Each structure stands twice: as structure tokens, then as C-alpha cells.
Image (tube, rainbow, N blue to C red; front, top):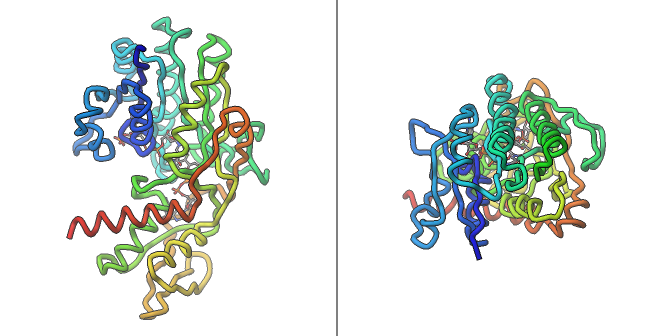
Length: 348
Ligand code: NAP
Ligand code: G4F
């Protein structure tokens, strides 16, 4: 049987790495698009690249979502059956600092891929996945967010992804492209970017335990997030593109925790006994053993507008895709801690 071909924009990111591994196991030929950077940005996929068994089925090209010509020529060259658009300026706080660039990549970049599919006459051949986000729900008041919850984005990032969502729906309706939006809630893993809060907390606490860092500085401890594992979530992306009809799906665990609850769980697992004192930006965590302050809040990590509460209802995906989250928050934290400890021990 002919191998299916996938083209992944954002292959060097967290989800790009998990999705590549997932598709290679399913016997796909995977083309990945990486962007040029001044230092090597392939650390998350080097293991696949160096694996003799998958090497010939995993090919990387340079490209950029701000560059229409590279997008068009890569789609033309690779002739994919499935395109996954995972590329984005994906950091919410950074999007307040580079709003125009975030829109250029996240919104117009998505449009560029859809236009390339249309202009190459591939509307009937290519299936398209768009990486949507629970950040689109933003300041919603709904207790559980699902596919019918109205969007109320609260950052340039969230707004840029709302454009990407609707342009994907629009191209599906106007040109009959098999295009799906996955509205994914936060998903983490050992290879999560170091400035996202889960990785920052675990890395920081382990460094403090090992004596390599004195304090961890955080922002708002009271926002709530619905955290799953990236490995589980990339499977949902693939399942969306295997259905008879294209549609949009919420992917979430249905459980939500505050950042402080995440810190408390991680600290306990790493072997700290901590006590919280103070309020707001003056809130701190003290290591009970030596009375030292190990966590402080810093104004610079608070956002101009916060998304206070996210909790997803993935019933549609459970029913139609037979997709279920497999990893609990505790298991996720355990895996992230194990990886971090190994990383530091290997460096010693
Ligand atoms: P990530 O780790 O930040 O990866 C983003 C990827 O996009 C990286 O490969 C990055 O390249 C690439 N990229 C950035 N700007 C680009 C450009 N101009 N042209 C081409 N590629 C570019 O994000 P992730 O966590 O894997 O998330 C994947 C996608 O899902 C993103 O679109 C994100 O917005 C969305 N999403 C994520 C979550 C989550 O919780 N993780 C939830 C919902 C939606 P470099 O490696 O060179 O930076
Ligand atoms: O880990 P975060 O930066 O993730 P955020 O903002 O929820 O966005 C992530 O998930 C989205 C899905 O909902 C994705 F679309 C997006 O691409 C990204 O992957 O922050 C989580 C929460 C926020 O409320 C933030 O204010 O943690 C709070 N927080 C507190 N202290 C912090 C910090 N966030 C970061 N990054 N750094 C802190 O020091």
C-alpha cells in the first residue's frame, strides 16, 4: 500500500515532535518544515533524525509561515495527503509584546497555507489540520467550554487564533477543503518550551533542589488551566483527519487546576515542604526545612489581561473520534520530573 504523506509546519515544536513520532509509527512519510534560526532548533526531533529506521521517512525543509513562496513550493514538492499547521508564535504573554508578528504568523500564515492548497488545485486531495486553542475562549463565563461556546479571546495570540479558526471554516465551506480545527486545551510534556509555566515550575524547583538556582519567579498563581499530555493530544489531531467529514473538535481533560495547585503537587513530588505567605504580587513560598524563600511573584510575569478559567468538554471528540485523554495531571508531572532529573544527572 502507498505510504501516506504528511507535511508538518512547526515540526520543531513540542507537538511537531510528538506528531512526527506518532505518524512515523503509523508508517507515514513525514515532511517537516523548520525555520532558519541562528542556533540549531531541532533538539526535539534529533532522535528521529538520527534513527536509522525512521530516517528515510522523515525529511526536513526550510520554510516560514511569513513566506508564501516557500509554503507554496513545499506543498507542490511534497504532494502531501495531510497538512498539519502547528506553526505559531505560541506564547500568550509574548504576543502582547509582538502582536503584529503574532498575527502575521498565526493568522495570515494559516491563510497562506489554505491559499496555497486552493491555488495548487489540491482542495479535493489535501486534508488540513489547524492548531486552534482554548485561548480563543479567553474571558468566557461558561463553566465547561465546548464547540458551541462563543469565543472571547483575551490576548493578541488568542485573537490571531480566532482569525485562523474562522478562515479554516471559511475555506472548508467555500472551497470544500477537508479542513479541521482542533480546539486544544493546554497540553504539556517533558519537551514543553521552558517559558511555559509547567516546565518553568518543574525545571525551577529541581534546580533549586540541586543548588543551581536560588528562587523561582512566577506571575498569577490563581488562573486555572485544563492540562493534558501532548502525546495524547496529537493522536486527536490525526483522528480528526481520518473521519468521513471535516469538523471542529474540543480536546481537553475536563479537569482544571490553579497554577498554585500545580506548584504544590510538583513541590511535594520533588521533596519540598513549602508554606505560602503574603498576597498578590507579594505572595511567596518558603521552604519549611531551611526557612528560605524559594518562590516569589514578580509583576513582569502578570499579563495585561488574564484568561482566568479554562475547563474543556471533549464529549464530541469522545463520541465521534473515540478519543480519550490517557494521562492524569499527576502522571504528567511525574513524567516531567523524571525527564528533568535525568537531564541534570546526565549533565553531571
Ligand atoms: P511550540 O512548541 O511553541 O512550537 C511552535 C512551532 O512553530 C515551532 O516549531 C516553531 O519553530 C514554529 N514556528 C514559529 N514561528 C514560525 C514561523 N514564522 N514559520 C514557521 N514556523 C514557525 O508550540 P506547541 O506547544 O508545539 O503548539 C503547537 C501548536 O498548537 C501551536 O500553533 C500552538 O499555538 C497550538 N496550541 C498549543 C497548545 C499547547 O498547550 N501546547 C494548546 C493549543 C494550541 P521554532 O522551533 O524555530 O521556534
Ligand atoms: O503556561 P502558560 O504560558 O500557558 P497559556 O498562557 O495558558 O498558553 C498555552 O496554552 C494555550 C492553550 O490554552 C496555547 F494555545 C498556548 O499556545 C500556550 O501553549 O501560562 C499558563 C498560566 C497563565 O494564566 C499565566 O498567567 O500560568 C500563568 N503563569 C503564572 N506565572 C505563568 C507564570 N505563565 C508563564 N508562562 N510564566 C510564568 O512565570
